Length: 398
Image 1 (tube, helix red, strand yellow):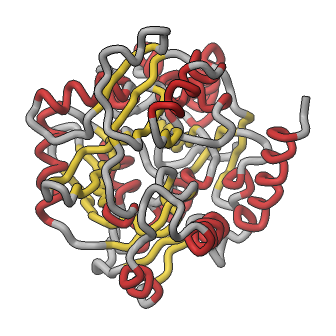
Image 2 (cartoon, rainbow, N blue to C red):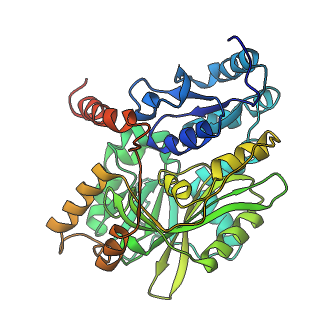
C-alpha cells in the first residue's frame, strides 16, 4: 500500500447476507473493510470489500488478524457474523486483544452463554424473565420416563451451530405427538449431543418481536430499534424473511433491563414471542452479534455498526444519522417460498398464518432488502449461484 488509512480497518468474519449490513454501513463511512469467508458467499462479491481472505480455522485466526495489523499499521476492529466465528474469537481472545479491538462479550464468556441455549434459558429464568417451558437432555432409553409434555413440542440442539451441518438446513424439529417423539429419539440425528425439548408457544410467527441495539464499554445503550417478524424461512421456526419496524418502548425496556442484568457488552438482537394464553412475552433468544434482518436498522435511520466501531476503537468518526423512518425488510427469494407455503398449508401447519393486516402494512412502508442494493448489486446477483451450490452439495455431492 502507498499510504496507510487514517482509521482502523474492520474485519468481517463470515460473508453470508447477514454481513452485508456491516460491510455497507462501515464502508460508506470511509472505513476499510476486509471480508473473511467462503468463496461463494454472497457478500464476498460486494464492491465495498477492499480485501478478501478465504475462511480460516481457529488456528489461523490470530495470524490473519496479525497480518492485517502489520499491513495497515492500526489494530483492526473484529465483527463476527456467525456463531462459529464468535466461538473461535472467544477461544483466542487473549491473543486477539493485543492486536485488535473486539467487544467485551467475546472476552468475558457472555457471548458463549448466549450460544448455549440451555444455560441461557436457566440464567434468564433465574432473573425472573418468562421463557418457554423446556427440558434439556441427552437422549437415552429412559428419556421419556419423567417428561410431562403438551404436544406439539419443538426439538432443537442446545448448541445448534456445532451440529448445523448435520441438520439439512433445519434449525429445529416440530414433533406432533409422543409417538413421533419416540421415533425421533431412536433416529441417528438424536445422537448429536444435548437437545432442548421446548413447548410450542401458540400463535402465528407474526407475534415475534425483536429489538436491536449496541451496549458500549460503559454499559450504555445505543441505536435501539424494535421491529416485528411477520414471516420466517423456513416458515414458523426459521430466520426472518419479512420484518417491519414497530415502535415498542415496553419491549425495548424489557430487553435493555435483561441485557444489563446479564452484564453484556456489544451488539445484540433480542427476540421475544407474545403468548396469548397469559398475555406475556417469552424470551426466545439473544444473538450476541448482528442478525440477518439488521439492514432494516440502517434503512430506518440508525447507525448501529458505526456506533459499535467508534466505541470499540475510540474513533471520533462523525456518525450521520437520518430521521427514523418506518421500514419493511424482506429476504425476497426466501419470503416468496414462505408465502407460498402458507397458501398451500392453511389447515395443516402447526401455527396460524401471519396476520394479513401486517403484510398489507409492510407493503406500504419504505423498502429494505436483505441483498439488493442499487449501488452494490453483485451480492444479490450471485446469491442464486450460492443457493444452487448448497443444494447440490446437500442432495448430490458424496
